[in-house]
Length: 373
Image (tube, helix red, strand yellow):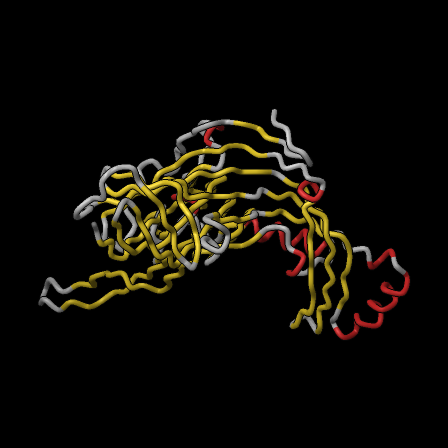
């Protein structure tokens, strides 16, 4: 029998898909980890250039930084419990899944100008007295400008189509690199639904394209004309999107060399059995995960009322079209393992993350009745 104190099982800490498992390991070099490109160039550089009674130093350079990670998923959970009589029971807490693909594009411009002026000081030394020159700083100007290129382009497109924040297609999320201002992409995260979903964590990264049809409907177009002096606007129309539903299952739990399978999930706990002997004092816990990644086309509606450019009231809803028709294209399943020292509440370095360990590879279409290709 073994007591298992609270132990963190996570792809990284803090959680990030850049340190997660690849959704499509078969894609080869295009995997989950962060891939960055940094290109810097000097525009001009002047060092201690003398201009009569002045001295000038100036430099300007630009830097282009691009980063990408994913498509990937990342998970974390805390496990705590015990073993005995050939079975294991673990309480699950803090479970979370993140999935999707993120990218960032930052343009940085640096300008520095320093201007010194010459001063003359009388130095008394009898017959050797003279004017001694020295430099005094007159101006020291430095500016560092960073632009999130994706956000700039995105805002221009939104402005051109008069779109609002509630209709945005990409999600803005945490940094994927300290050099990038922000990250954008298809991204979803879910918390606390692992046990209630029968041992599955599900996330659905989605790219939505809103189509505002209010200019085509005369009463709504007239209503927007009346709202314009109030800096307000109504938008309404269909949402067309692409979804990548990701499902992650727990297949087994291994304590040292004892593997527990036939897992069941209920009341916030996971339980399983083994045909071997229960370990005494286990030092390592390993969780076997299995994921599938699918594809769907979504359709929905959105409605948004923007008031004085400060407040938004709206709603949106979407339906997965292929799933509704009973067709669910899937890639996988793929197997991954995550382990940690029993009782450790920080994440263990994940050397295998980002590479993916493919198991069975199937493309499955499941209409009513079911068949496989």
